[in-house]
Amino acid sequence: MSSPALSGLLNYATTSKSRLQSLYSDIHRQKHSNPSSFHAHVDWWHGTLKDIISRGWQGSDGPDGMSNKLILGARRALVDKLRYEGVGKPLGLGTTIAEMRRSNHLIPLSQFLTSQQSVYDPDWLPYRIASFVVGKPLWWAMEQLDIVRSEDSYTEPETWKKIEGDYVMLGLVVEAADTLDILRDGTGLSPADNLYTFEGFRREFGAKVLRGVVLSELDTKVLIKFLERERRVVVQDGDVIKFVATSHDREITAVDRGILQLKTAVINLREQVNGIQNKIEQTSSNISNALRQQRKSIALAELRFKKHLDDLLSKRLGSLHNLESTLISVETAAGDVEIMKTYQSSTATLKAILSHPALQRDKIEETMDALATSTADAREIDDAIRMGGDMAAVDVGIDDSELEAELNALVEEAEKERAAAAEQEVVEKLHNIEVHVPEGAPVQAAATAPRRTAEAA
Image (tube, rainbow, N blue to C red; front, top):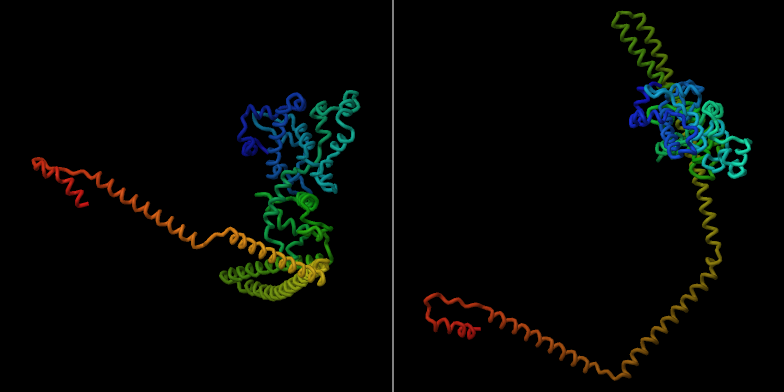
């Protein structure tokens, strides 16, 4: 890595030089004296190391010659790789990595690959178990007696001796697993879609889970372990990897192995067919070039070779068709088995429901008879209440004709009130009309105008 490369990272681009000098300083004594600054320092380096690892800038440190994208190689050489022009080397990187290890952001690679316990288990790290068993007061007393040493008593070189090794960057593994979940959304409809060899898994997902990079062999092992132990979406048995959707399907059967063998054979045969087709195209091009150069003997030899390739392609295509047909038949049969299992389970469930005492024929008849009796009793009570109400009305002596006459009188009175109100409204409107008399008109005419108007009304 170089300063220009580091300058392209977001953390460096958005941080001033004076702040970088502080972040590159030795902080091993700040955890207790200035905890807020210490944790801000660790958070900055956490994000920076994630970016560096995911871009593959550590170098070819994997067993397959590739740079790891999920694993940090915590070695003193990393300090030199992070040298920044005008700032220097990160003097507190060892302390930072130790703190990231304590906070579970970094997990020792060997522990991650071999442990049966989830990394999210609170007792995952040994120091947490020790702190739970021993207790902080006793631990403090042991520090005072120099039986154990406090965290900030180690110098940077001593810290490096304790932490040097390979660590899984948990945040990157989670990111890769989330991306894989998105990639597989809507897939896995057939048994073959859920089965992979290790190399098949790496070939299918290695270049897709992190943008712009390809996972190394060790990265792939880490991702598969996380998917199996933490996410519980895959199971692995040797070289067979199976995606599972339910807890009862966490077993790799002989049928699964057979389907995977067929799937692998189909994939390999397709690659052979593609290779033969490429050779045929190249041979055809060679024939054309030889004919243009009047080299008939070479063209004839290339033509014979092309005939052999055509025959081989025809045989491979026939074999590929047979294997694909066989794979479809096997998948169909496996699907039929699952359907029959579902039928059996549904039948057992239905039988269990129908065997309930409440659904026995005599119990049903008894219940329906009781319901009919209760309905008849309710009807009798309702009729009795209605008859009682009618009788009470007769006892009061209310005459319907008198009620009707009184109602008509009320209606007539209301109509008279409405008519009187309308007449009053007309009169008020007439009084509000203004009469305009032209200048020079006889006074008498002007005086008699209102009377005429009133008579007209």
